[in-house]
Image 1 (cartoon, rainbow, N blue to C red):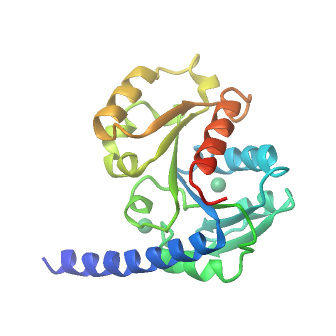
Image 2: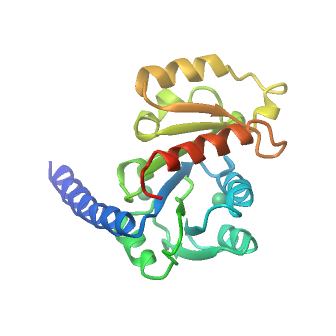
Length: 219
Ligand code: MG
Ligand code: ZN
């Protein structure tokens, strides 16, 4: 019982901070995306490709949440955009207070703010970080049973990217099952199949993202 009360307080405080983030971003006309996935699903690679494809037409900033290293942040920094690293010192998710702090450092003279959450399919889902849209990446090697095993994460997804579909020919992975289970858990979530490595489906994702931004009435 006590544990529940504490968690509730933490989440209430988090929601307050997430609200502040939304206000700041709205005033600046910034569209924010929160990327969530397991470690190794391909978040950073998809983010790299997305920035490469969009950076001539949109100003993009990036906040990276990582336990200890700046490996992802240094990859993204090479693309010449503004990068802020949050080291969570062991915490397995970003919370809104961490992002609020990072907003003071990152350039908000941008159109798109990309937030890369800590690699984890569990608690990042319960901490709203004030983004406009949640992008959840599932990759083929993780298995086709993940939607129902991590329902909270797939429930908060606005769009699910199924990555590494170039590996479908080597693995038993039922794409239709994933689509069906996603529909049951979250009928509003969009679903796009991609291979960040081979480029398949990425154009569809870029078009989808451009449409989201155009319809957000922020820019
Ligand atoms: Mg990464
Ligand atoms: Zn966590």
